[in-house]
Amino acid sequence: MEAKGWISGDESAKEMLGRVLSRARPFLLLPPLHRVPLRPRNVLEIVGPSPSAKTHLLIQAALTCVLPVDWNGVHYGGFDGLAIFIDLDCRFDIFRFSHLLKLRLASGSISEIDREQNDNTKKRSSIAYDEELYTLCMRRFSYVRCYDSFEFLATLKTLHYRIQKEKAYGNCVHMLLIDSIGAFHWIDRASTCLPLRGNNRKSHSIQTVLETVVQEIRKLLLLHPMLAIATKATLFGNRAMNEAKWNLRKPDTSYSQSGGITALQLPYREYMPSAWQTFVTHRILLRPSDDHLAVSDDQNHSVYFSEWLLPSLSFLDKFIVKEAGVFLVA
Image 1: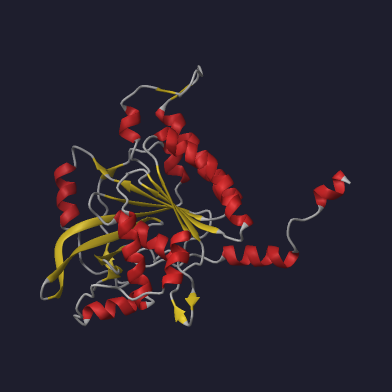
Image 2: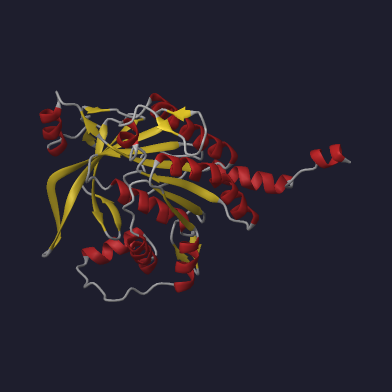
């Protein structure tokens, strides 16, 4: 009876095929993350100085994840799944997330919101949206704040049970979002070793802490196929600091044969341990610009550049950030 119980399946062949086929499809994210198809178990690193809209891109990815594909005849283009947001920077504003979600719900799609703003319509004091769908999307968003590396590790170790519980209710986690992965690097590095809490004799160095973090995330992705996205602040080398600052503000805007802007990589220095660097499957670099785009008589928006480093693409995307989302500009 024990052997029979062991070989009995937890799901039917139809359920298995539906799960595998649905998870095999790539994630089609909004600009500027749209250039490269991302799949479950991929690890995307969004790297850039502050400010370069890294957290805003993370929030927009979370919104796309929790939104449905369609709702009451309105197309939202979401992934109909759960998103787990781990805040290591301790700056996340849930009221801002709620406001951005209402804006996405108000017009059904990013493009429709953009058209409304470009038509110079007045801002409304209240936003009309589907309250039932709003509640559903907020329930699909899980937020965790960690104040040190040990809390981060503890969170990762308990996520498996949280995800299993959600699956029991028929919910599936599609994204693991981390802001920002290097938040505790310099605090941990200030000590030669990190004593574990309690009476254990063992201690952890910064290298072993990051290795453990990578192992825990890898286990999660293997057990629960989902897309992991992490932001990371850049660090520029001293010898190239002046040149880096100049390149940061004045990237080459000549056009390549493919129609995009020619890429010009910044000489930033990698400070994360090799365990994390080799774990990342995709990397995109963001940069601010001195340029501003006038969208109305009283509104100017900062212009940013994005460049894919892994895989390496030979052009840049230019984009602006609005409350309604992120939009490419010519």
